[in-house]
Length: 112
Length: 116
Image (cartoon, rainbow over the protein chains, first blue to last red):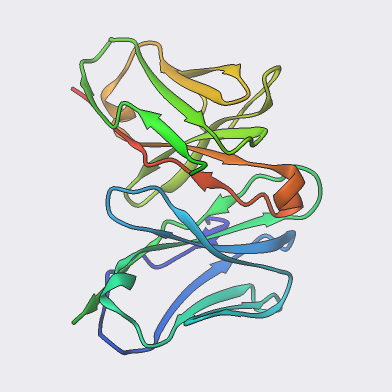
């Protein structure tokens, strides 16, 4: 079983829809939870990160962490065609240098 | 603009050839990483370096070697390329002073490597 599981999609939604992207994980030591966005033929870029449980909002993006269920989510409100990309979740434990474990990414397409 | 650059962006080579991928950064970060990305497998860490004298193996280092020539430069070598090393390769950087334990990483644009 992989430490981080993520549905690869693809996920197609109409413009303006609310998008929900999710990851599950098995390592209880994970404390930092990150979301990266990767456009085609580009490197991943960090969107948001949260520490431990709770929500974090940044514009149209909201990250949620439920450590009791080992489940994290990224919500995109009022989705735009420019949001079409692959979204990777990533996680790491706390303290010193800790390896970051990435999900395989979910490919999202927002249809105009 | 502070950035992470990779050369070449695309490379086609033959089995058995030696190849080097290069990474440079102007972010002033101390940590640098090499990953490969494969469909269905995601990003996997090959090597990482905390400074010029500190090189560490990642989860899939066999068949690869690295050199940290300076704080800003980190190169990845395939001594004798094989077809299953065909992948997208990314260099990344991070900085303990700004990201702390979160280890947020900043990625280059990637090198698409094909081994025939």
